[in-house]
Image (cartoon, rainbow, N blue to C red):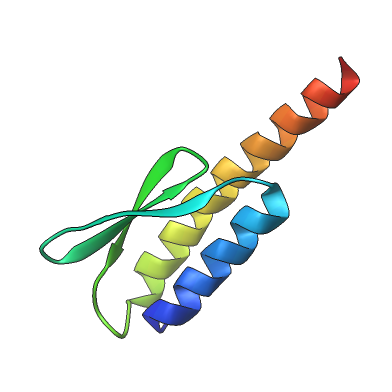
Length: 77
C-alpha cells in the first residue's frame, strides 16, 4: 500500500469517528501521528507492507470505535 493512501485512510477514519489526526514528529525511519490521542508510527517508505498497513488500520479502528462508544455514552447522559 502506498504511504499517502494509508495516511488518507487514517485521516478519513479520524474524521468519521470525530477524533483528531495530527502530525507529531519525524523520526529517523518513521513518522509519528496522533490518532485520537494514540500515537501511530508509520514507516517512511513509499510502499508499506500490506500486513503492516492492515495492522495500523486495525489499531486505528480500535481507537475510532472507542471514541464512538464514548461519544454515544456522553450523549445518553
